[in-house]
Image (tube, rainbow, N blue to C red; front, side, top):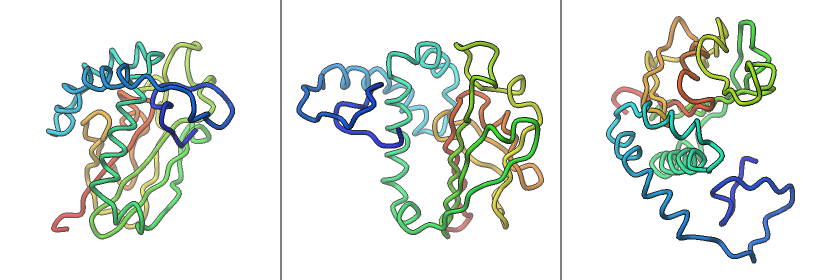
Length: 192
């Protein structure tokens, strides 16, 4: 679900509205966040964090990956309030063999462009039920079309610190999802 509530910072697989009267184990959440501090420090310093993410992704069930994504998204939202509240929204198009397996949109304002991209119908993308839809073996020549006009030549992946390049008006899905199966990409407008 795209929303979260106090107590649902880790995986919550119930299909009902959260019962906010249930006790929340804040000590566990605090300890998990503290354990992620080295990754946050690398991402905040614009360093790629791929090595640390492999462990989180292989143990995704413990919820730390959700904490990382949530923290990075909330921090970006806090730092770009005007973009998030008043930025232009644009759904993105796709081309290639797995184009029907993507959902993405952009938000733009004079400060820059943020792109959110996620896969859908992932079971048909992966070799087995445990694999994540990442990299060129999964995505082949599938591309995410950038909004017109896009002057950004590079986007920074906010969850990994990696750089994703604009190649003639599109991003390769294999680059966007090189490390993580979800993406939040940022390109600031020079001089903004």
